[in-house]
Image (cartoon, rainbow, N blue to C red):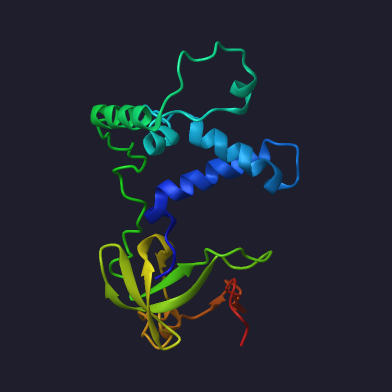
Length: 212
């Protein structure tokens, strides 16, 4: 089965945010700014759960680089390992799981009404296409239909393809199909000559008709 982006939405959204942050930096080397970007993504607040990813993992916020240079009074006493474990247990007991936000829509993606009855379908190319390359390939024969995917015969092999990549294929009418016959207006020939009052016979020419 081909890779379906909609089935891995959380990871794909993180990749989209990471790429957008890299484009905001002037540096052309993404490896130089990736550590700063990832630190910001792990320290920022998630609106759907109300905490940052670092708080969900470590139980406290990460120290950002600017906080190391901030003037602050020394603590009254240093925290021991037992104090840290106790604070972590207290925070864990107060934490209530909140379901992540649902970004997908309840409406299904567009599906052509003739897709369920088509004998052959075209498959969209999801790879990077060359200039002027056709976006669809096929048509291919449909073997079986499911709600979310079709079983297609490609080069003698059965391949499973998501319905989001399919569109129905239409074929022209077979030339051997008999066409309806129309009456021949030339079957009843009429006289195309008239006689004038002087007795002269004149032949009239019918428009759009070849002369015999």
